[in-house]
Amino acid sequence: MRIALDTNRYVDFCRGEETIFEALKRAHEVVLPFVVIAELRAGFACGTKAKKNASTLTRFLGKPRVRTLFPDDSTTHHYAYLFKQLRKQGTPIPTNDLWIAALCVQHELLLASSDAHFHHLPQIPTI
Image 1 (cartoon, rainbow, N blue to C red):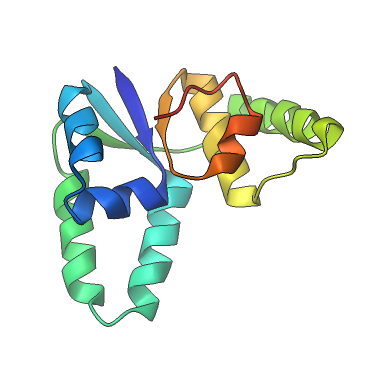
Image 2 (image 1 turned 45 degrees about the vertical axis):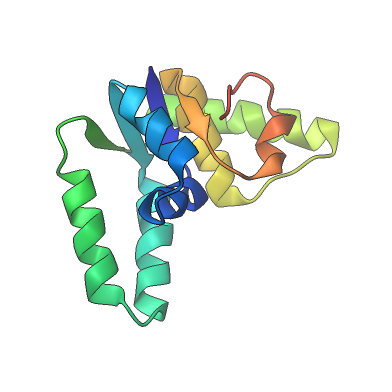
């Protein structure tokens, strides 16, 4: 199982939420889309525990089963297709989440997110 973590589920993991901890334990690969890392770092910059949170993230990213996922040309095609699908459905989602969705479709990832708007994209399995 390959899991992509959304920002909210990474935070849940750091808070010790058992369900996400168990899911990540079963995964053979955990992926953090580039935009999730950017959102986390933006949050750290605005918070009171910036150094501690950044250090925790660095340790997490250094784990052997964890990798960062960046877009490429193929990702932009998935992004465009999903954008069109959501627009046609009348169910747009935030731009950062559209990037996450495009990467998940492209790389056939299971998405760990608590954002309900991902349910508008049935081609992305979520937990």
